Image 1 (tube, rainbow over the protein chains, first blue to last red):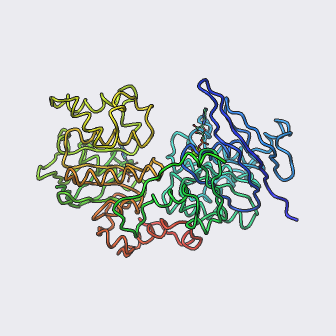
Image 2: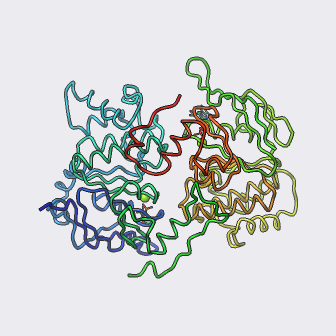
Image 3: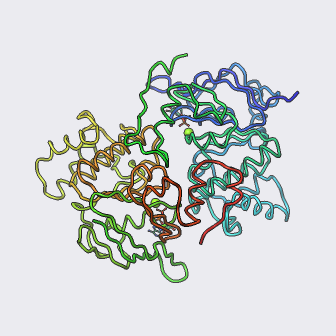
Length: 275
Length: 257
Ligand SMILES: Nc1ncnc2c1ncn2[C@@H]1O[C@H](COP(=O)(O)OP(=O)(O)O)[C@@H](O)[C@H]1O
Ligand SMILES: Nc1ncnc2c1ncn2[C@@H]1O[C@H](COP(=O)(O)OP(=O)(O)O)[C@@H](O)[C@H]1O
Ligand SMILES: [Mg+2]
Ligand SMILES: [Mg+2]
């Protein structure tokens, strides 16, 4: 039988701050196969913290707890820090929301990708250039020699994707990976991710605030609000969402072919935060 | 109200020069809402900056309310104001909302400051409690409301909006778009709205121009956009790509120069 890639049960992320505890993620559970799982929700709903918790990259004073956290049969909760770090960047990769903070500022872009490839010798440069071409960077020779501050936001996102895909991970967590890209480039980058899931059997957690994009790209969608999943949907049925939060988000989107004068705005219900 | 003829903008000189805006012409009637769409780097913000008097080097003709503009002319804050994508960057972090809204009045020597500030806050749906807050005490949507209120302090006729909702959550975007539509009606504003989001343009504008690499590819009315019947292949591709992910569309994407 096919073993799940990732099993999460009752994941919590708490920040103990001087003014009290912030519950960033409150009891999240899901099982991921070799599929495209979307996580949507407004800013602050806990999407990034969920991704970072899986990688053990929650910044202090954040604390992660879970009843179960298993990657390909390996228990992440009891694994020692060194083992966990080895998993990260090889078997599990994450494209962070802001590429500027996850690239090394004093290292050329090409050298960083070469390092991610963990390769040496004359072939590496060619593989780096291929990785840059794969994410539709037009002039890879020039980009190879640039430093992170010399590239635009959209270019930085593509470089991050190239870098994270280089070690051919089993699981890729992509946090708003295409938000700074033009729609046409976004489509091409999604096609690359699509291929990796379809052909190599990679699992993908695709974090985004763009409901329409997730509905068209993913297999399954979790809708987060206030650190909880309020609704899980088959991506194709996103428009048929039943939770008032999901419905509210969908209604508030302007659409090319509608003529509504006034867009409905979301009326939040405190009950959405309860179990 | 806005008239732009053969506008050219170049940055830098010699071999490294960049022709950022190429022979752009369009006009916007009083009270009309006109959209500029296009991918990043296509020159949209530069066109707005020329009209706001924030870009000193350009050639061609530009006029606002019949007044010709010159490349080195000072901005005309009582005629035209601009709102930016990131309200955090456009509000001084150590100035209260009160100061942000009073400043334009004081610079212009306009009195009656207190009541005007309160009216402006009410106009953008913020209560008087917000008056003495700092930007970091506001949500993204509240900050954008303050930026809009500030832009309206001098009662300009033209509002230039540069991706005003791109940094906001969709539910907050809806609130800001509703606000802008209401303010446009109430104040008889002429809007020039830049966005990369075609649905936002369809919702807000009467007409629009599509830009690519500094030039206008085509101009159309909003009905044509809604029917998704543009004339140019470039615009058709943009529309297709905006509809969400599609394997075949992704494979067929071409670059237009
Ligand atoms: N260092 C921190 N201290 C306190 N709260 C934090 C910290 N970092 C994140 N949070 C909180 O965690 C919540 C979830 O954040 P995040 O996962 O980044 O949201 P999203 O990615 O959905 O926008 C937010 O409400 C945020 O305020
Ligand atoms: N002050 C400047 N100096 C040099 N180049 C600039 C400057 N402002 C804009 N550009 C360049 O001009 C082009 C058009 O930019 P912009 O008008 O900001 O595009 P858009 O708003 O459509 O994304 C881009 O290539 C940009 O890098
Ligand atoms: Mg996030
Ligand atoms: Mg711009």
